[in-house]
Length: 277
Image 1: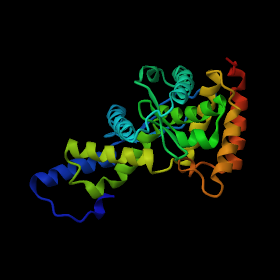
Image 2: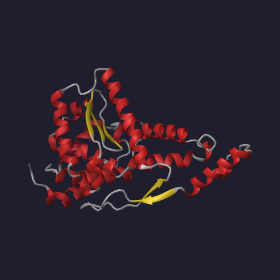
Image 3: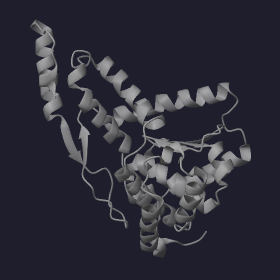
Image 4: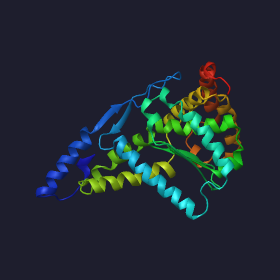
């Protein structure tokens, strides 16, 4: 990767470049961010050593507050008290079950808010920063079980640290091209923040990540007292809404048929955990 970078380096800059080249080549590590759960998620994950969970959580907290502030400026933050209360109540039941996959998640500083936007969207940033858009609520008209399915899915992305994987991949790929700009911690932090914003708002998840989030999401829902089979009805609704152009946050999800088949299997596996509340 680095051998194609044609730059003239001397003295201190050459030493810095050599140091960071070594980090780029050896700085990936293999982790498994969660327990496998009943659904059996056990894929080993590759992350860039310079992208720590703590750093990304900090960047996410900053980005989340900016997002809320922007929404507040537009009078679009939690526009309906009743809707916000409903979303938060469902999210809290799901959050209480996250210890099944990772105990430390129970101590995260979780936040749950509704943002007024026509976009059919929902997400959970690293560290447990959740947002559901009013466009999703209006167009999907989810039941509580279906709302639990989508929030559980987004929580699963955070538990599995999919954003960290994706930011790691982007930073490792671009590292050689930016080696001179990456020699300071401040530049590294800026790059990380930019890439986190990209993977949260602009870039779709991989199909592997989506399938993992689907499976963990149905288990969280079942353990929280929501019918896990609602994930299937949710996807059916989303497919109808999306038509030929799916909602942005579903744009690389598996095809409707394969996804429904996988969700049916996953929900059947966790159905014994489901105790209606």
